[in-house]
Amino acid sequence: MKLIRQPKMKTICMVVGLALAGVTSTTLAQVNSSLQASPALLKLLSIEDVKSSEIRDSLALSARIELDQAKVARIGATVTGRVTDIDAMLGQAVKKGERLALLNSTELGKAQSDYLKASSQVNLRRVTVKRAERLMDSGVLSEAELQERQAVLTEADVDLRAATDQLRVMGMSEADLKRLASQRNIHSFSPVTTSIEGVVIERNIAIGQVVQPTDSLYTVADLSKLWLVAEVPEQQAHWAREGDQVKAEVPALPELEVSGKLIYVADMVNPETRTVTVRMALANPDRLFKPQMLARLKISKPGSQALVIPSQAVVRENDQDYVFVETAPSQFQLRSVRLGREENHQRALLSGLKAGERIVTNGAFHLNNERLRSTLE
Image 1 (cartoon, rainbow, N blue to C red):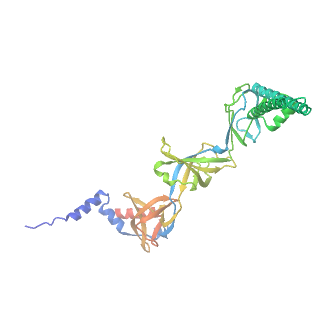
Image 2 (spheres, one colour; image 1 turned 135 degrees about the vertical axis):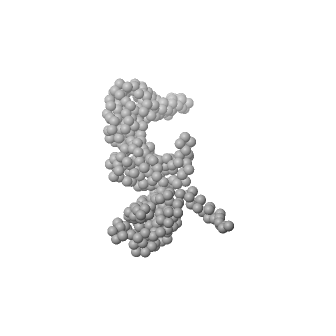
Image 3 (cartoon, rainbow, N blue to C red; image 1 turned 45 degrees about the horizontal axis):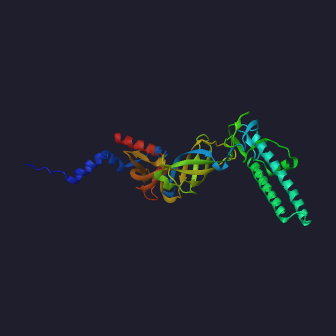
């Protein structure tokens, strides 16, 4: 009787393992075998040495354009009053101090009346004190009576200062106060003025409307400087540091690409979105960028030298990456490689090749088709 030798357990495990990985014996033969390229096929190929290059890790994020909150002013009335004139409309460019609207305010008229009365009392008390000083010098008036009149003058001065401060709170300037003191005419109209130069982006006012100091009547923004804001997932928050180099792309303006630095990284994680807010300053002198436009923000880290290959050199098969290596003139071998993620149409080489080896960088698709065709013959 003839004995049949059973295969070793190690060989069985290797075959089963390769089968489970989806790698057949035919595939292994194809990878390990060399391929001869015809002269016509060689004309379609570009062959280059494997070289090192700077690799920059980056993180791409969805972003949006927002107003620079340091360049936004929400403007209201300084007094309660009725709107009589409107000078600024939505989208209008305005300068600092320019009048946006005019209010008629009885409250302002009353405050001016109180100021004039306090001013008159001060003038009267000063005359009284001077007369008392002369009478005391003549021995007609006692020192106690003089001090009493000086105390009344002090009280009048306090009332005048309070009335002056009230008018300043209501929006009257020093020039307005001097004019009121000299002309002594009550002017109960109060202007609504802008505190910054910019563009009116919001208007909540109409003729005849009665407004309060708590009402926001206008919003003015300087659109020449904006923010580009993105949210970094909590798990990747370590990526973002203030001062990091960033690039941005705006789909609505595909011809423009801007770069800059992160000017802000939040110290807190948003508990609702589990993200960290980051911000980049965005110059907008021509006002091409509009608030609430969508954008794409890419944060880049300082680069390091590593071996790289072009993305078009990679052949993907059986969930693995391969490249064609030149082993001799017109001779190529399909070799398995481990690669990093793609960055600027290049992929970092983790293993499988050495510096100086020559690979097909362009035309690998044609060479792979020839390889597959030859296996079917």
